Amino acid sequence: MALRLPTSLQVGHYWSSKSGLAALLVSLGLLVFVFLPLETSGLIGRAWVFGVDVWMAGVVLAGASALGWRRVQRGIIALFAVLLVAMLVLRLIARGMQDRWTEVGASSASVVVLSLLLALILAQLFREGPTTTDRIFGAVAAYLLLGLTWAEGYRFVDLLRPGSFHGVAWAPNAHNLSTFVYFSLATLTTAGYGDIVPLSLPARSLANMESLLGQLFPAIFIARVVSKSLTSPRTPE
Image (cartoon, rainbow, N blue to C red; front, side, top):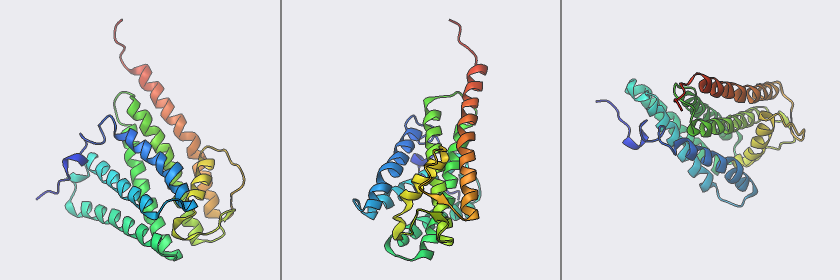
């Protein structure tokens, strides 16, 4: 018997809806600019950010269904679901403990899931079809997600090799993630304020990759929008 996801998670209801990518963009903005800084400052509890983790996992599952993952064998889909559950469990445990290796597991799982979500969004952005406002929302969401994914990557490197960054101190329960998000967005946009500096070779390699992607992604997406506009048939006046 084939495994079928609920109708609300299928392509015709989330990813192709007018509010799908816009809602994702708003949620990412709230996570990056509101929830993570408030959690770091201690003004909100861990439950708020974990609730966002659960929601993001649901979005990844919806995207997987939308792109045809439900056509593959049930074992692969089950493995994918286990990955999402493992990420949520590890993040929940990490937010309740002050153990560096638990944080390593949670951070690595987050990088995998965020990368998957980014791949799903990019697949939607560069599919065939006209350029719409949904694609613009998706492009901004993908840009923010690039910064968030790299922030988790930076934190993973710093957990494995403490001292990989100058200007960042280790903090339990992911309380310094917003600091890495700040550094990641500064690197992605090539602002480079200089208050946080990568020291280890893995950290520098990640920073170089992100700064390059920060320049290439807008250029490639704008080129696609322009080419679609030039090649699309014009309606007679």
